[in-house]
Length: 401
Image 1 (cartoon, rainbow, N blue to C red):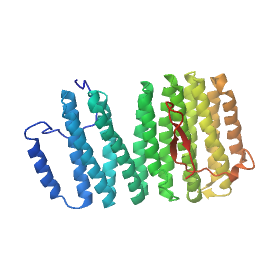
Image 2 (image 1 turned 60 degrees about the vertical axis):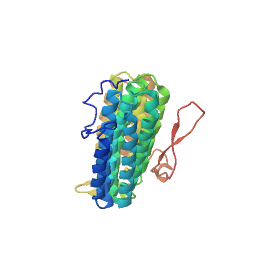
Image 3 (image 1 turned 90 degrees about the horizontal axis):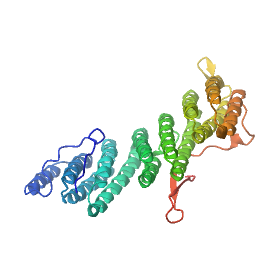
Image 4 (image 1 turned 120 degrees about the horizontal axis):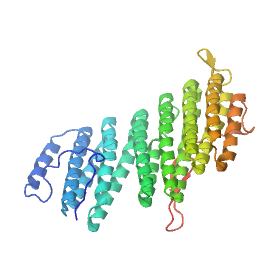
């Protein structure tokens, strides 16, 4: 059974496969590799070495699968072995470059393994699926370790990985691949949890985290829209729950950032809120009432937070203006976008739209939606799945750490 055409434009570049399992010279190739590994000293360098060898085994897996060669399964097992060694050495070293190398390489590996799994004979799928799952867990573990060694770099690497997974989830949703989409969401959860608590009040890290979450929310929103568009409403709901928790974590981070750098916090808040309004505007133009309602619901979370930060920052100046004035300026622009949304507003979204208008007005007037709202801080929540009834997809829920 041949692998068929894997689009080279989408397949990450790998090193040359070289001598593959099944060749009479393969044992010599392995012999010289082992000598090279023996003379590679230090855990960090050995980790880099094992990543390179893992990628060579992965390249061999792909080539053999394309040929329909049963040795593809052996190559996959050898990849798994080398990758496990790379992860172990990287974590043992505590070296951020080695940990980053493992986390960055795995994103490339997932794409190749997923493409191979779809096309190999049934008997070979189990071992390759195991290699894929172990690589995912390895990425999550390495990200957690990297976030502990260098929180800022951990957030950057984690956000890059999460964004890529969200983009892949969008593709799976557009192709109505339900099981693959659910697997992507579970993988997203694991990756997100590995770095979400990295900031811990560090100003630069909180800033980077909250800023990157704006991008990820946008990617998840598009994945959810694709799921709605292809009629897989249960999975669209799963995407929404994941997105909601990411927004909650972003707002928690912004609250921390407000304490030390209110100007930056307002800037990120304004951009994030505007992004949700622009999504609502796009949804109205597409006559998508359900998506419009959800985008406005997202905006309202930011607007309610805007009411809080405007009051929290009362009297604080940044240069020639106060923080309240910065919030008011941003909200004035939001109100203009809301007017654009109003022009083609679907009936279904009218209630959420009115909430958005009311919330924006409260931000300008510096008054909270309720007297208790200032006493309810946003929590940075991990994403977790709780099993439901057999046969049903897992529901994403947030729990306080």
